[in-house]
Length: 427
Ligand code: AMP
Ligand code: GLY
Image (cartoon, rainbow, N blue to C red; front, top):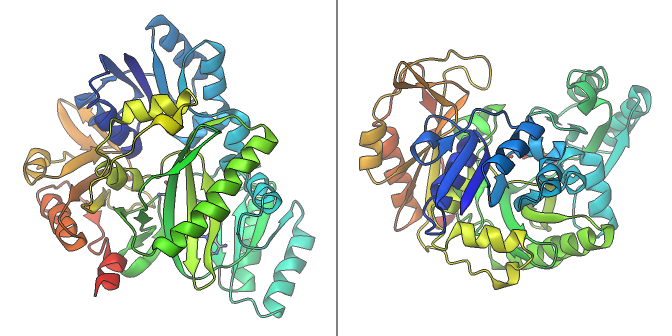
């Protein structure tokens, strides 16, 4: 089969790496890809938002199956465009992608289908929003969460500990800092506890969770510093114990499936549920309609089944026939980032030690890398996802960092405590 993956990040490198292991793949393309993806797929220079060009490429090259990685093309309707051209595709329709593309749409969906989540209210004007924030704090709230309604590249959420911060962020959203994405804001009860990520495949008839995982969103050790796209992940996440998973299945995933069926949403792809777990059980923080990055790096390193077979069955509405076999070994992904990320950073520095790192038994997934004069250089904020398995979580962490320590470029940094919550729960 000829397969096209759309995207250029660590997620897409991971998917290409895993898909490329399938004996069913004759040719793998990735648009636009990156320097690491170039090692496992043929990169095609088309941007993820050039929907018509992507469709033309797929038709001209007789692509049998397309996998859309990131949220932006999903929300822009790439799946619908591919389908209109008769291309088989993995991913939700534009309408279903609103579950990630509009936080208000997602919240209304959760409430309608009894999916446990934080209380929230939606506003398009600052004065009533401000009144609501003040009332919440006057009522004893210890914090409040302000969310720009639309996609904002991970920057549209502020967890505010006081009124002033909340009001300022709310106003900046409504004033257009995030463009149209912030013309509506969701103001949400602040939940406390431990976060985890649940990735689940669905074909609209069946929903199947993958193994659990946990991200580390803050830039620096001990969860300090600004929020990022994710500085590292591991799987499984022990916070998602059997009791929690039972609630995830019965109250979140089953109700999600009933909801998309009742609403007639065409969703044949991957649902990512961000949850907060505390003594009251798990509650949904967000839906995403694509694989989490860097969660997918850790999760895919544990998948022993043929990913192409599983994705094809999902796209064809035969997910109930798919078999998912997992390694018991935990996996850990440590993200290496450019100095200054998530703020501004310099690009173009040569990355050394990549082969030595893989010699340590790790897999090095590329995110922001490109070629310059035949060398691999950093070209984005998150640059590499160094991923390793181990007999237990401590061994997986040690293996991942042994590989990280072989890699260098000017200014690179990573967190040194990825997996600390899992280690603490082991003791
Ligand atoms: P979202 O894009 O909605 O997941 O928000 C991004 C991050 O903000 C989440 O991963 C959480 O760390 C945090 N967050 C979102 N909603 C809440 C909430 N209701 N309570 C506490 N933290 C939240
Ligand atoms: N790791 C969080 C995300 O992919 O949104």
